[in-house]
Image (cartoon, rainbow, N blue to C red):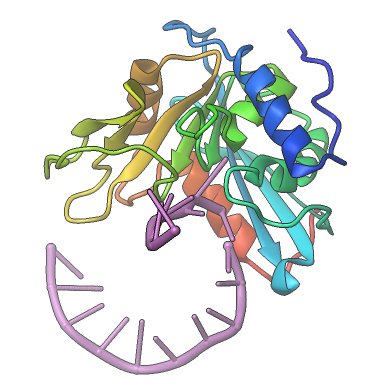
Length: 225
DNA sequence: GCGACAG
DNA sequence: ATCTTGTCGC
């Protein structure tokens, strides 16, 4: 169910932190999710030295992984970058991009952390609460937590732990390449999250939904259409 | 007190 | 995140 106060973006860092702690308590982590026919990949980045925020969303069909729809949205950035508060900087643009979609996906993969966050509310979790959809955090680097060696074979993973909890999995998505940091965002379990990421892997490091969103976002010349 | 620190 | 060319390798 929707959570109140998610839409407040004019917060002091202290207020944002307090809000994160409260919202983290609403994250659901069930094993089973509804039947999946559409998977969205989300990538949020910045341009013009951070002045502009750009959100790209690609919807793929499952199980073919064929892209069905894609949108890009740009808007002025409202918040500075503060480690741990990234979602407040990125989500406004992501929501605007989602509003442009005609398809409502059953599963969303987001570039960034889910609950693998100091207060268990990374951008994937925050977005999942807002959209009330199952989300998975697919990060290319670590925010917090520690882990042991990750086996070399594709699909292998090691738990990412923080303050006595398992907050995610460090996944070898491709041989001889730096691993991905996978964590549940909302309405899904870690195991199911890892399953879906592995199932969406092609020949590259990133799963198809995130990879296509990344690629779409970096095509600098085109506007949303 | 000293680092670390998603995008 | 972004600024940026070529280059090594499957």
